Amino acid sequence: MRVLVAMSGGVDSSVAAALLVEQGHDVVGATLKLWGGPSDSGCCSVADVEDARRVAQQLGITHHVFNLTDEFDRRVVTPYVVEHARGRTPNPCIECNRFLKFDRLLTRAERLGFDRLATGHHARVTAPRDGGVLRLQRGADPLKDQSYVLSMLGQDELARVVFPVGDMTKPAVRDQARRLGLRTAAKPDSQDVCFIGSAEGRHGFLADRMEFHGAEVVDSEGRPAGSVEAVELVTVGQRRGMGHGTDGRRRYVTHVDVASRLVTVGSAADALRSSVVLAPDSMTWVHRPLDAGARAVAQVSAHGRPMPCTVTRADTDGTQGTDFVVRFDVPQRPVAPGQTVALYDALDPDAVVGSGIAG
Image 1 (cartoon, one colour):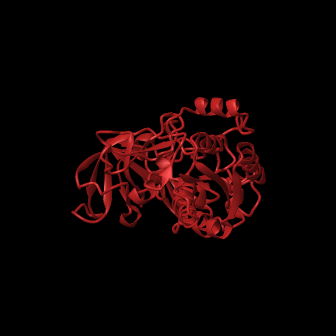
Image 2: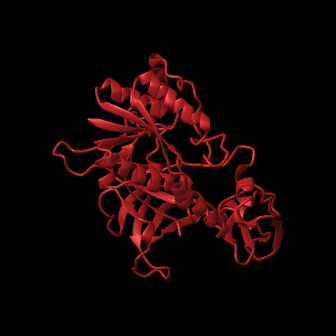
Image 3: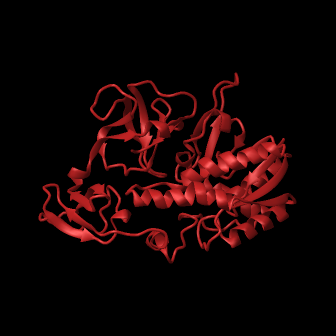
């Protein structure tokens, strides 16, 4: 089988390529050049490209670099800035997977005659023995599971991808890398958004690309409770920088209104929400949509706690409608608008059924 391996320069994709070579596949490595600006984190630095090239050399496979900087800026970076200007909290890693890795790169792999695209994600694709519906499942290592950031994949993509390290724990991946003498064996995992440097942070990155506006902070009764310098950087559910109430307890952001330059805060109890509405046009399904009233398990961040829920269809007035509404069994911290909510099978919480973006 001819396999194109997306090599980020990290240990997971390095071992993914090595495993495929050991299995006798015709393997070629490819690294995406995504960010044209400075970077010292994530998977976009010059050092990462060099690490991927050197690992490919060690494995004796051809290595290519595909320049997708324009597409990355249009599909990931610009929307990231625009969403913050609207007071929303986007997830750029998911959008990169959606539009770059599992769209543009997958299409290119197919056009170049490859049978599969492989990545180093900690997730698994499984199928029943009769060759029926493919399932996207959590990786074997619960601490490194990446099914959340892949939750937008459907049957078409799953039929053309492989995740060689999905059945391995992270320590096992590093052991394999050390056994093979790969230069990435001890390389730390990427932690941050790849196009944001550690020195500038989110504030510095966005400050160069948009105008910030101060905002008044009020409590749930509308009484003044301070101010913020950049309402565009405030996230629903945030507690950092929100001070304490008259009772001495921490305050949490319960609502952000960028247009009115107003941030509302409240107690931890005030911040709890029993549901979240997902935009209909953002919904994707691994196989088919859940029926109204179906049980599921929701996860609202990459390593968030799975939460039992019911998925219904309703308009904002509560009548039967087009919006997907995730109703939690137990009230939760609010999901910030723009964040992805991944839905898992209620009977098999390791299996993704779909995802959507909080409205």
